[in-house]
View: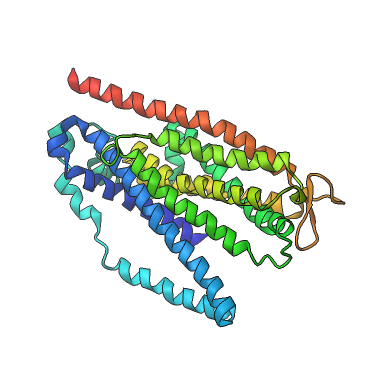
Length: 368
């Protein structure tokens, strides 16, 4: 949890800065179209990042299963290999450029090309880097308090956290065992790999569709995120309609894991790009909000799904028996996810409207 929170916020800020630098290389020929160019870059970078990240996840999942079943080694050996692999990125990070050194070089772009705050963030970021440490420490809460867009985007993060915790505990812990008659959960790794494969491919595809420079068919980030939210909504509705795992088959089970992949691709790639677009001068606070809401929601989801918070005395339509013999009421989590998904979609479009309106106002001021 500590490592994930630090990495998420840090790489989110680096992602935003790298997007701005890459887009800045074309500013001299784009002029006021620079804002559009930056959104194209964040779309492309978001898709590329999520594709690479999820592809490595697939390879590690499949390799561990292959090594255990084929070579007959123990999990201790697998964890030892993972520990060795974790050292590699630490060493490679020593060669990664510090993008702060480029801020001075591009700090004059706003004035030169008439681009106001919210398009190129280096000038403002340079000022924020000199602020007292306590301001950076509270950047997440400060952004949530001062910028309404952060509030409207929070339901998406909550939706992801709740859905992943619910599916990890209920789907992987109970349903797949009943559908495949697999008491030892042997096929969990295979089906979760399907989710990662779908997520990696979808991330690359969505990144291309969102970039006007790579395709004539432009699909906005709002539409892509709506597709992701609907994927989680459909999953919850499927659980409500068919609460008993005995009513499922291999096809319906596969559909859920595919939908999980689609939803996750939007969270890992598109949502990252949206936060980079909406909060270019509040990088730490923006990506801190993602981990704050998704992490909190995930914790609550596990508490409701796994602990004794929602237990039943006997099995029934919405009371499912887990592998450990405990019986849990899954209906509450299903309805909470549905409600969150329904709220998150209009909230997303409200944030998008506020972002577009702010851009229009800035350009109108420039023209005047």
